[in-house]
Image 1 (tube, rainbow, N blue to C red):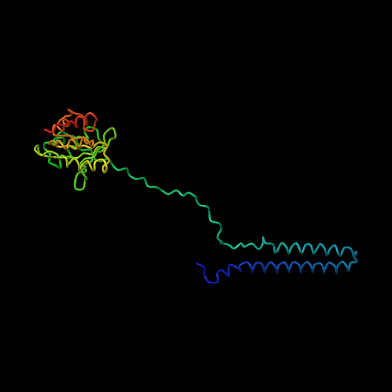
Image 2 (tube, rainbow, N blue to C red):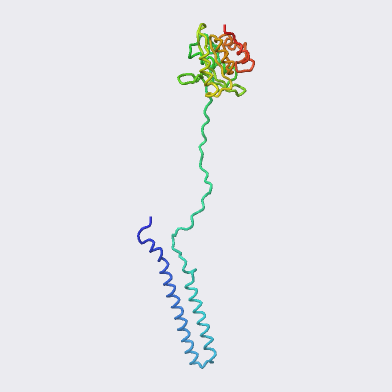
Length: 256
């Protein structure tokens, strides 16, 4: 912020040194003239030759003019005010800011793959999802996440196979008499690929599937694993359902 009168003080800041220089120049010229007068008087009293007078006068005047010009030169009038702000130091044009290294999040806990964790017959609906997650982990998937719950949009388990495939699994813990119908498959088919980005979409049930459900699954590329195929997978008698051979076999799963 500029205070009143500050601009006027800055504008006239060099007048005082300039005035002192003028006075100094006039004083030097006066000294030279006085010295010349004394010299002429002395020379006249001593009877010196006439040609000495103009030469001496010219020398004295030349010296006086040189001194006067030097005293009022712009170099001497340049402001040398102490404490005046000098040019700002050049900072680093590309300042480097300290960057904190983020801690790498720890990998998710690997599901228990013990025999009790794989026993889907003894599990309830919630435990069944963890049983399927344990099977995925046993067969090399990592990470494996149980994501089932309200708002899961059909995904109960999401895993990544050793080959890097993203597997999305829906778990149906049903009684033997309760088959998985076409509507169940259609709801899952609407989200498994488009929403969850599945490379392999799998529906696993403890029961079986209706014929329309299997037809829809075959048309959409959804792998269906029934109770019999699940038992074989659990006993390692069949390959994991995300492998190509298992997918072909699952497409021919019995509806009985």
